[in-house]
Image (cartoon, rainbow, N blue to C red; front, side):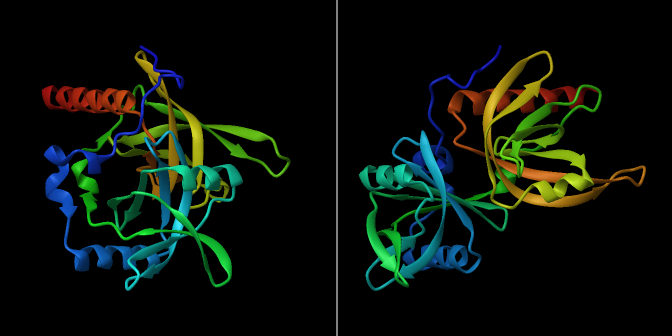
Length: 258
């Protein structure tokens, strides 16, 4: 089965699933502000999903007006995203914080300025999802038939260079890739890659969006140093996430029977 990019679906937001993730929701304003201040202090990159989530862009928290009950967010570099953000009636913010997924919902954005620069503002939410990364079970992929992932990196010439890496491990929230240590300089934290190809041998090719969360140096058993690129899925449709989770569950069962 191949799930192509034109498979029409929408991202799965855990904040919309209280039956499964309700225990990870924070409702206390003081606790919510603690996490918002951490996002601000760390200058964490935030993915801003508009309405049902088909359109999104990267942002960051620029300020918190506690007295006015407002968050101040950076605008997109693209005018079309900024126009769409002002029209959207449901804004979902998602960001990693110390290996924890933070997710919150804003009903709408308006224009404001901070230090003389244009920005977005929205009401401080009354709920915040704090989901531990270990809630996503992670499995190392088979070495005999490794999964592979292709992504396009922009070169200085303006052309794209397609890179093909084996997948080291996989979870419902993301994956890590192994590559030559020299390739580490090609990536930056928070960088977003659209339409990557995740190839599962003999089963499927999935189109996915990836955001770089970690760039690590990994030493293999033979002493060779490799780049380990940790990425999270961005705007992953529910059909593709379900397929990945079924694959992980099957790999886990097979390992237990060996």
